[in-house]
Amino acid sequence: MSIERDQIRVMMVLGVTMAVFILAFWLPNHLHENRLHAELDVANKSLHQVNHNPQALAGMMRQVTDLRMLTHQSQKYVPQTDELADLLRKLSMELRDQQVIGQEVQTGSIVHGDKYSVIPITLRFQGSFPAVFGFLQRIESMRRMIRITRLEIDGDAQRVNQPLSVRVELYTFFMKPQGGKP
Image 1 (tube, rainbow, N blue to C red):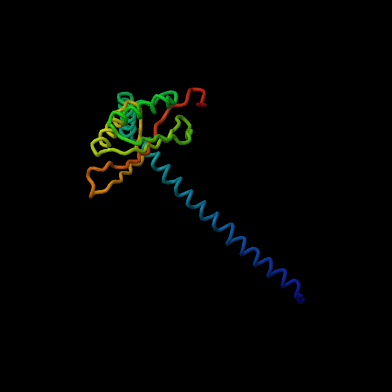
Image 2 (image 1 turned 135 degrees about the vertical axis):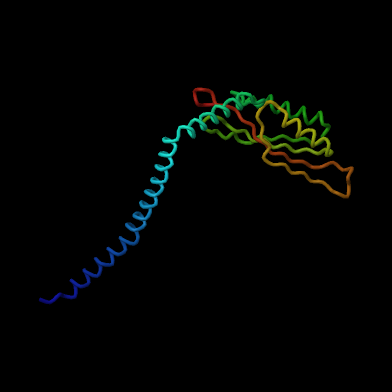
């Protein structure tokens, strides 16, 4: 019995197709599955150690309790509403108290998270080093949670009497109402 040319071609095409399938689809998925099983084994061992070590679990519970107490004792707060106008008024008053010039305040788009929202604010002004330092201290001492994310100070070292140009980027936060929408 002789095998015809067409049958040989079909067998070769089937062999190449099977090799491509194995190399392109099955092998990578099989290797990924093996990695996931190894990660699962490590996680199960870790869970087994925690379950059989009540001291470690009790220590973690104490840490959680301590962190909750520290959070409640914190002098900083995150308001329930945005209160943006009040914050901008306070920032402007602080800048005026420090006797800076050319103050400019810009707010960015509010970024909504699951439990809280972030309001980016950019401040630009000119002033002496003590004024800049005093303003930053006042921001840090505010009760409201504010995070300074960027501080740019530009000045000429040769002209010490010239005011510094300052750009401050900061974030402030507010919690979402219990309904979930701000």
